[in-house]
Length: 310
Image (cartoon, rainbow, N blue to C red; front, side, top):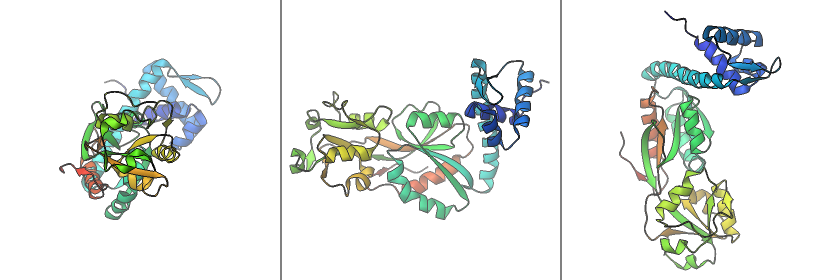
C-alpha cells in the first residue's frame, strides 16, 4: 500500500502557497514555524519532488510542479471538509460556518433585506461573506475557499451546480432634463445613439444589460467612461455624462434618492439576468443551499420574477 500525504501536510503546503512566507503560514495554521517546515519537508520527501524554493529563512516561492500539487491539495482539502460538512448538515441544517461569495451588483441590493431573516431562522449559522467579481468567485469555489456563491447568469460556470432564484430586468437611468424624462418607456433603439456608461470589463452585468436591450452594436462612447460600481455610474449620470442601465433591484438604493437622476423602464421588458446560487458538485450541503435559496426568494427585490422552488 502506498504511503499517502496527510491532510495536515497538505494544509501546510497550501498555507505556504497562500502566504509565500513561512512565519505567516505557520501562524495561519496555529503551529510553530519549525513544525510547519518539518511537515513540508516530510511531504517533499514522500513525493520525491521539490515543491518550494526557499529564498530566505522565511520567504519562499512555489515551484511549477508545486503549483500543480497545491491545486490538487486544495481540491482534496475541500472534499475532506465537505465530508465533515455532510455529517454536520444531516444533524443540523444551516449551522456552523458557511462561506458565501457574492458579486457587487447583487450583494448591496439583496443581502441587507435577507440576512436578518437568515440569522433569525438559523441562529447557529456563522455566515462569512466575500464580495468579488464572478470569475474570481468561481475560482474560490473550485479551490474550496467558498461554499456557495450568489451570482448572475447566464455565465459559464463549468461543472458547478446552480439553483436559479429569480429573474430581473434592467431600467434606464438618465440625467434630469434628458429627453427620456418625457417618455413613459424608453425604446431600445433610442439607446444606440446615447453615450451609455457601463461597468468595466469583468462585471457580468455589462453584457447582461446589453443583451437584454437587444442592441446590435455597442452604444456610442461607452469605452470612455467605465466604472467599478453602480454607485459611481449613477453619480456620473447625475453629472450629465451620459445614461446607464441598472438592474431593477439596485434602483431603490442607487437612484431612489439620487438628485438629478430619472429612471425609466424599457419599452420591451426582457430578463437581463438570473440570480442564482452556485456551488461545487462534490459539496455535501445541497440541503443548506436549498434552504438558503428559499430564504433569499422570500426577500427577493421588488419586481423579481421568482423561479419555482425545489
